Image (cartoon, rainbow, N blue to C red; front, top):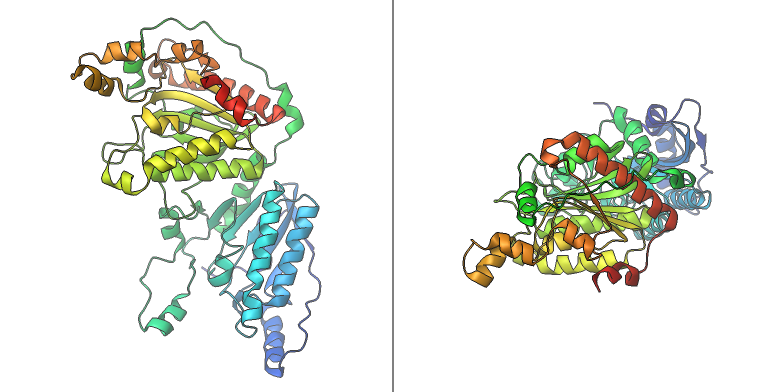
Amino acid sequence: MARLTSHDLIDLVLDEGSWTPWDEAPTYGEISEQYAAELAAAREKAGTDEAVVTGEGLLRGRRVAVVLGEFGFLAGSIGRATADRLVATIKRATAEGLPLLAAPISGGTRMQEGTPAFVQMVRIAEAVMAHKISGLPYLVYLRNPTTGGVMASWGSLGHVTVAEPGALVGFLGPRVYQALYGEDFPEDVQTSENLYARGIIDAVVAPQDIADILDRALRIMLPPREAMSEVADPGDEAVPDVDTWEAVTRSRDPERPGVRRLLRYAATDVVPLNGTGQGEADPGLLIALVRFGDVPCVFLGQDRRGQTKTHPLGPGALREARRGMRLASELRLPLLTVIDTQGAALSVNAENGGLAGEIARCLGDLVTLDAPTLSLMLGEGNGGGALALLPADRVVAAQHAWLSPLPPEGASAIVHRDLDHAPDMARQQKVRALDLHAAGIVDRVVVEKPDAAEEPEEFCRRVGGVLAHELAGLLTRGAGSPSERVRRYE
């Protein structure tokens, strides 16, 4: 596939005729005649005056700021003038309150300028972080190739990061590796597809699909907050007093809807994310940007289909969850956590991966998070892996959901040295949603008629209506204090 130029991508992604350049003529100071000739040749080849093109345009009618690399200009390399242009554009986008779209393509630092160019990555990273701290979205599309200091700065700081299919994406370019070490870099490592498989990027997206995913992400990230107060409360229905053990048994039904069916039936829009961004992805946790009705959230859901006996919920899933917590804080969106787990992994790998520490850090992050939080107890709630996603400003539970320090069978084994007393232990420990509601740990219970497994679509839509109302209220009121979040446990 032919490499798209910066202006090809502008024409493909932005609304027709909406592009307005922000670029000012670059200045280089005293440079050698050879470098001046190379710059002149690069301008002629690329049709641009530098290795980045910046400006603003409309994306499906929404005003956005854009920074794009141009590989035809000295392989998209970053010099001092390039960095000046990038930093100026990022700061202008921040000052004008615009989301920033970045499409880097680069071999890295401009070797003709050396270390003075290399250290510009610090300035670029600082400008991007200031933009994010202001609560504005930063979305990145990695193109072929993106390597070196560009990948190690503005290419890796996106709230959402996707990449072109088959793109060479990595830190040390393969040609440099071969020259330094006398052997070829292993194939299929520095590729978009491998980075996705490793949980480093969120998706592999063809250029023609970029406008759609950007538009969907921005609808969630930048909602019309003034309309949130108008989301109606669907009300609470009477919840039958079902025996605790019956609730536990029903929660384990393999046909019971989990987070995927909840999103399929109840969500208006879903933009899936992937992994920690740091080389881990766990199928036991689903992370996404989601809207219920018009109400947005960062969604962290324990996925009952992704958790198996051979791959239970591990520490990587909790590190992925903590990425979602950071996203909610940076984007100033509500965080929705969904509890549905048979329990965290009990294994050598889990211990070596710091499972207990990740549970503690999740608890610490949630009670101090400066974003509104909502927790949904959807099904099973076994042990610390479930508790790690519980602390919130508001807690909703499905009728047959429950929370316990161990599965009731485990409690029976400890107390009675058998499994026969599991039903009695579940009742004694007050694990079911109704008991937790009576204790003030759960704020509201969503009825099942009589069981979510028998009415999956209707149940999920019922839950979705409650979530939309609760999230809207949280978005309007803002985050509670740590003391308010823990008061329900006193």
